[in-house]
Image 1 (cartoon, rainbow, N blue to C red):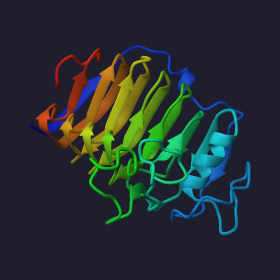
Image 2 (tube, rainbow, N blue to C red):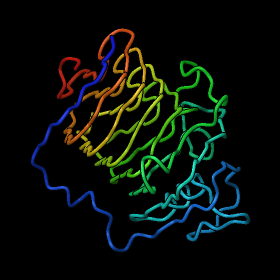
Image 3 (tube, one colour):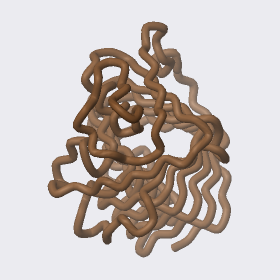
Image 4 (cartoon, rainbow, N blue to C red):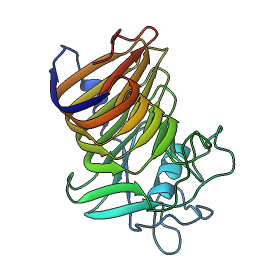
Length: 253
């Protein structure tokens, strides 16, 4: 089941001020594009010898209570550290694990890319969280903007998984060529009714068994404005979007 080209515009009234980054946030400036072993993290500046990688910045942000921001330049940031315990992501390897309020901002969709390095990822069925790009848990807000994300593999969400009751916001984003069992690009675990806000987001060429681009499981509030779904595919159901259980999407779109 495949969606060729679908533009979805769904606007719901909701106060989005809670999604904004507070004024007291700390900025982590990523200076490396590779994925070194994150053993030496200087808190809070994230400037170990040789500079700060994206993974090191995320781990440093998790250690500091309160909202932070990670700034990415015009570059390609590649993940290469696979892990041995895929069912329990720790962020030191595998998916980038986010546990506290965080905003990650790039230069633009065309000029900032976060991806798994070519040839690194294994079949997603054997390693549930080993090759996702982002794994978000907890109730703190999470924001991604002005970048492309690609190449992830995961059982639930090929590139991005989030759960619990947090508010997740994507803007000026492209998520492409991700593979999952459910939710080729994104899996939303909605059992604590998270808010999922999308603005100017492209889902392209993602694939899964269910929900080629997105799977929403449980109860979630989805705010979508200027969202393009193109060339995503599902083996069984939901070429673009699949709703499961108590999701606000009761049938595939």
